[in-house]
Length: 102
Image (cartoon, rainbow, N blue to C red):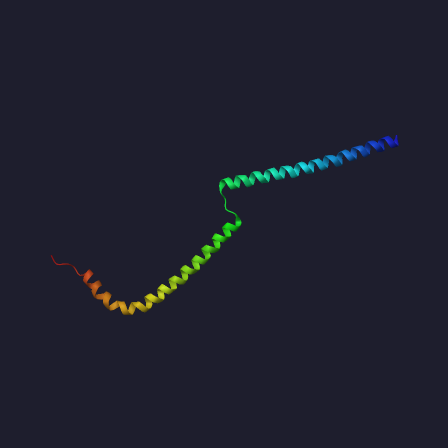
């Protein structure tokens, strides 16, 4: 009896091991299918990759820095040009503000 129960237990253990192996294989297959479906859906939705997002973000940062530098340069040029241009602007501004006689 001992040898037959031992054999049954060995067969049962082998069956469980095989079932666990099959379950693991099925899980890997399901993971692969789900991953490929998600990738297909993301391609169809036209979502950008992380690398593309980071590249555009870096371009925006550089453009913002360049914009700030250009603003500072324009302000400096206007500060230099303002004393030179203000005498010519004042008479023209007064003529524009003067009421016209009819």
